Amino acid sequence: MTFNSMKSRVLPLFVLAMSPMLEAKPSKKQGEERSIAVQSVEVDTENELFVFQVSYAGGCEAHKFQIDTGSCQETFPVSCPDARLRHFSNDTCKAIVSEEVTISFEEAGIDSYYSEAGLVFQGRYELTLPAID
Image 1 (spheres, rainbow, N blue to C red):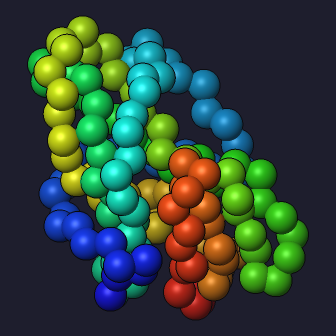
Image 2 (cartoon, rainbow, N blue to C red):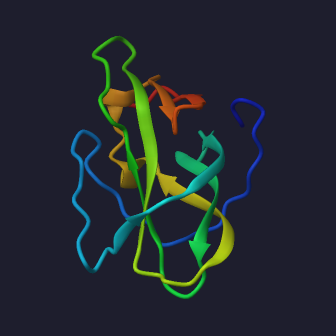
């Protein structure tokens, strides 16, 4: 099932999760935070995945991604208007890489607190999560 009529395929990549309410500090091993262009986001409710279509500069080294839900409003259901996909790497290559990045709800720290939550990624992609037990 797709939301907002966005279509994407699943391609596994290196993924790093973080606690949803905390801002993680990048480590040297993780790499520096880099810019990323997000073209689309969807929720695969059957497999409990976020699927992102992204582009970034690189091509020579591993890249890591994590979801930062930002500050969530304590409404019912929860509303997180400042969610974003964070991107880390020490890659110095300049090729433009287009990839599909998948992050599971578990890796992202999404649990029953976020049941039916509304998230807005990168200030423009609105998603509603399914009911989570």
